[in-house]
Image (cartoon, rainbow, N blue to C red; front, top):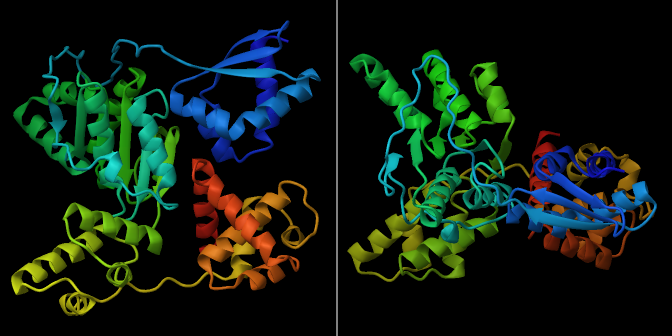
Length: 450
């Protein structure tokens, strides 16, 4: 069987074993290279080391099992990383003159400046942002080879802008010759209007259509602005056809934006990652990191108190810390819990989210993995029911106040040690499995809607 045919057949099997999100994310970029009949070695190519590591660590067993089903024997699986260079820019555009090559100084960042303090090293990772963070790291290591375009959405103050700056700073450090454009969609509009008014629209187009990396923040500002959508659509097409990296952030997912369908489809053909509200543990970790940066000490008690004042917007937590430090300096007082309470006495804590019940979590897991409700309590250990139960137990322990014995009783009378094993298993997996982290977030969101 030819290498392409063997691989395509294997993909059909793999597709039935994992989620569509996982399949589309990790298998769409794999290219079969050769299959040695004598040694039974299938060699494939992936775009970067990030993909290679992910495939080998998370999906190799599934791939080997699928190949064995086809060939009726063990088949070795060899993964190579593509070392192909990006093709030269060949602009394809409508409604514009041919792009003139423009020489940029290597240190020039077009649009807004990148904040050198916003890097991956100081971006605190948790379940709510792990998938988006991993995708952005992959992009920074191999622009336009991993995922393109990348669309990140989430509420205000959750770290979307931080990730864009981190990507830009990482790429600028690894390859200063690449031309980076970072701006908000509002700035894009203002520059476009100014260019039209002054008769320099082609200069504007050349500015943003001849870059290696275009990052647009707050793309939702495109809504209701047909002319801007038209211009951005053509800019998108030129960059994409030339294999240039495109990233955008928004407060909503693409399908929820009130923009042209053709522009929605451009975003939807790439990788979409959301950033959810941070857990208490993540908020505490972020707050401690910010305090460390400011060279101030916050006790665990103080961190918990501040973190409980705001459950969603990380920027507000940073603002509270700044206010506390300033208050401490002005009053010449040591930062204590009493001082923090006095300083934040006018701050109203964000409303507590509705507690998710174990029944809602179990129902969400069943719906997400397309199982039967009885699979949550059955004694059978067949996959995928056993894995789904582990996910449900993990989420129940994370999101409810139930004790281990209570959780076990709700999953078919299982012992508390089974619950601990399930929790530890999933907790270990999400440290390296970005797709599973995303699945947990989607299940949690589904449970909230029940």
